[in-house]
Figure 1 (cartoon, protein in one colour):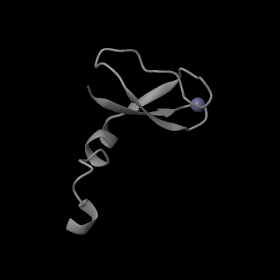
Figure 2: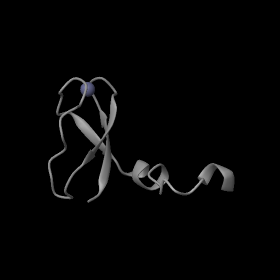
Figure 3: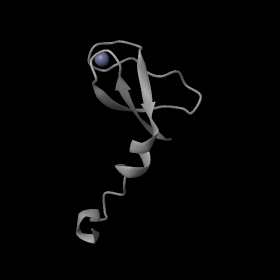
Figure 4: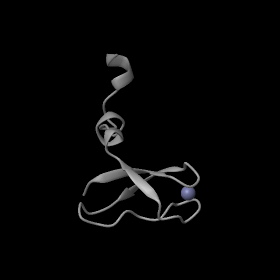
Length: 58
Ligand SMILES: [Zn+2]
């Protein structure tokens, strides 16, 4: 199941949710606003296998 990152447009809170691809964006975990946008780039840039030391590679 994919992990999506969202950014709340109301309070700028960033949070991640386990959601289905076709699911509606979840409400903000901080203020409850549904005015959130999905951040696709985070999925590929920050979500990495935990058993790999990426910092050492760089
Ligand atoms: Zn919010």
